[in-house]
Image (cartoon, rainbow, N blue to C red):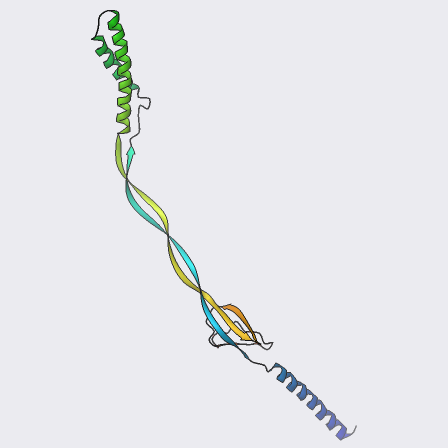
Length: 179
């Protein structure tokens, strides 16, 4: 094989390879950054629950031992019957005794009912409610950037500054903020 043919082939291969690499570099050598046109902080509302308790005075009715008010009815009937027996003579006395017993029984029942309803006591009870503390928290930043004549928006954890880096394919690199 001829020495000049070999040298020419090698130099030709080097030139073709270098030319292809240079052409590829020129095609990929577009802008390496996208210009940031707006950064807007995004806030979110956070509700934190807490328990709020107070001691409150309450009035309660004491438990009723005689819910049918038998004692009041019986005592009223006896007292009414005795008083009715003091009035009249003969059959009128019997009628007055029965009427006195009936009226006294009714009056005794109502008197016991009134006493039971007003038989109360005061106690202190703890009443608790859930209250919410409301605060604002930074959720991130809506970043608008211009690339290739179009404006796009992405949400980022940090304010990226004035520009965003691009990868080899011309896409925004999200992991590196602050450029």
